[in-house]
View 1 (cartoon, rainbow, N blue to C red):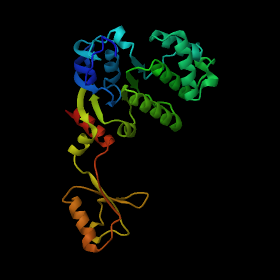
View 2 (view 1 turned 180 degrees about the vertical axis):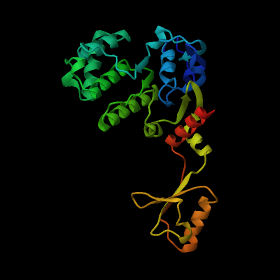
View 3 (view 1 turned 90 degrees about the vertical axis):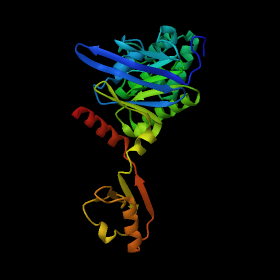
View 4 (view 1 turned 135 degrees about the vertical axis):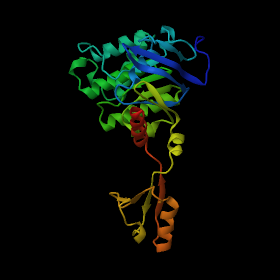
Amino acid sequence: MSAHMPESANTLEIDGLTKTFGRRAVVDDVSFAVRSGEIFGFLGPNGSGKTTTIRMVLGIIRPDGGTVSVFGSRPELSVLQSVGYLPEEAGLPPKARVVDIIRYLGRLKGLTHIEAESRADELLRRVGLYEHRSAKVETLSQGMRQMIQFIVAIVHRPKLLLLDEPFAGLDPLNVQLMKQILSEHRQAGATIMFSTHIMSDVEEMCERIALISDGHLLLFGDLGGIRRERGVKSVQVQAPAVPEDLRDDGLTILPDGTVEYAIGDGRTPERIFQSYAASGIPVDRFERMLPSLTDIFIEEVSRARQV
């Protein structure tokens, strides 16, 4: 890290960030921090203020209130040289050749001509697009363009990566490849924050999250802790039969034969287990199920919009 980037437990700190367009507060007093070296999930429905927040972090939009700290400093040009950004909307010049645009944007981030050229070729080979290096951007499929945008974001090996809907338009193989490359960057010391509507990706990759809706921060913290706070929502049981006293509307048979029981109205995990024991039915698997991130997302956003 250079002299203007002091060591800190947090790579990114947002404090009281506010932005108003007209009479509408698009981002309203939002505060959270992203720890150095983590993969952080930044969530919210469409129009929640995620992209506006990211653009304020990058200095593209000036906040009306609050502060942003990147590597312990204001987001000035010298600091942002060590940041990579993949926007939600593709912004590559359609008439430009793939290798030219990667090389040009790499040079803007401080790479030499030789470094930019060699890293462009290396990354194009990695994502299986080397044969398209001389093609014009407009001739590529949506998924190919997204992978080129990703290469542009990482070509200078940034210390902080901000990714807005990075998996949009990608097939499952390229999603897995992008996740693998992101994991390698994290292992090399990079900090990653990404937004997405695919909650399973967040559950797979992130330990901590922030959730905003209509410009307001609804949740921030450890994902496991947030799920545990809400308690058990159901119990899944694999067994050869169902006890007589549990055969009612509170159960669901899953495709693999697992029985899922909703918790509530006096039905507890303990009572379910006791019913199996009393019936003499052997249990192969008994698992308390915490609410999924999708459940939490819908619950929190719906509650906030009813206030």
